[in-house]
Image 1 (cartoon, one colour):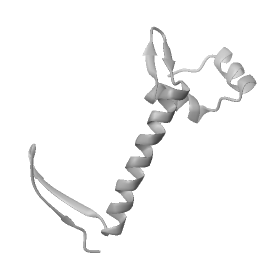
Image 2 (tube, one colour; image 1 turned 180 degrees about the vertical axis):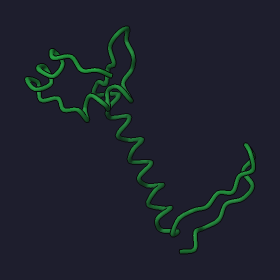
Image 3 (cartoon, rainbow, N blue to C red; image 1 turned 60 degrees about the vertical axis):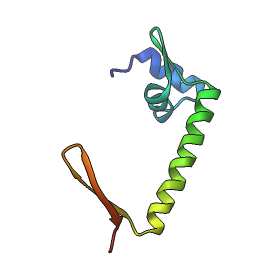
Image 4 (cartoon, rainbow, N blue to C red; image 1 turned 30 degrees about the vertical axis):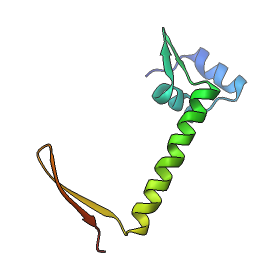
Length: 82
């Protein structure tokens, strides 16, 4: 998306960085022409990220995970070895 001069000025004035804008665009709720990432939505997203971190830590503890698929059918899964 292109950024207007107005947007860049307001971001600077309000302490909003590019990563915050990207987060609003990716995880905010669309309300007409706006992407709204309010505190409630941000907190819910944070909780989901915490759940994801727990799963990733379990994968790391196992040394990784392999899932074998054939087309849209999952065949088997096993721990990585190395």
